[in-house]
Amino acid sequence: MMIDRHTEGLCCVCRGRDAGLAVKSSGRLRWVCSDADCLDIAIRSENVSATEFDKLEAEAAIVGGGDAMGAFLDEIGVTDMASLSPEQWAEMCKRGAAGYRQRLKKLVDDGAIPF
Ligand SMILES: [Zn+2]
Image (tube, rainbow, N blue to C red; front, side, top):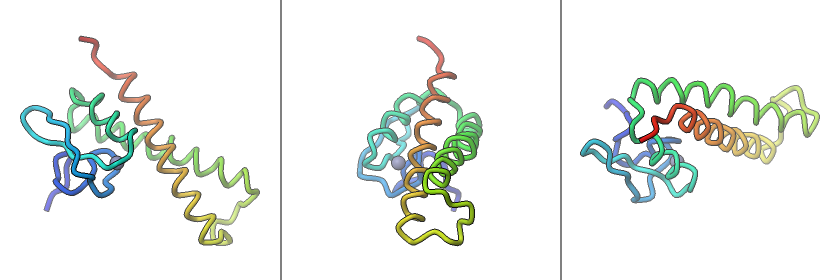
């Protein structure tokens, strides 16, 4: 099964479980989770092609998610991720996801076509 921005059951932004919310785009539904940023990004990216959105997601994950996780490691003074406690690992992942969303929102806004 191919997973795309219209796959029912998955948030079109973070691929988390959808919360029964959807944005209609070009006659098709794009599902979103309960995160307000994901809904915001789904609405703002309505006119972004799937190919372009894929590129934005990759950059957001590498730059936004990576920077946020790196900042957390700097904050706690850890350089070896194998030494993280389960709680620290969870916090790092949470911050990475938040950094991804923040960066994706900025990238979508920067590329938004004014109407
Ligand atoms: Zn989401």
